[in-house]
Length: 88
Image (cartoon, rainbow, N blue to C red):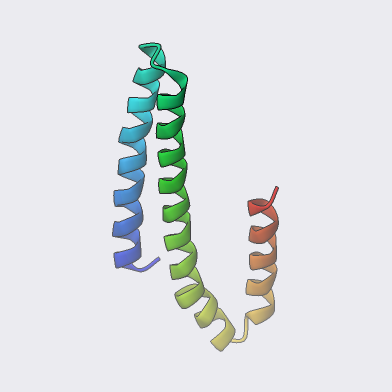
């Protein structure tokens, strides 16, 4: 993972970590369910953005490099596996 992607993903995960702690407190404080759900949706979107950023970096760097070096079949198998995991 390149340094820019790593920094961005770590920043997003720190946000998720803090936001998730807030959601936990909301539940402990018996906050109204709809308000809690809105926050869990925000956490999910933040995770999806981090995943998207990692995938973008992977496709542009790791996959491209693997194809250029002749390891295209292995990297395609990895992507197929990743797709299967993401769609379970």
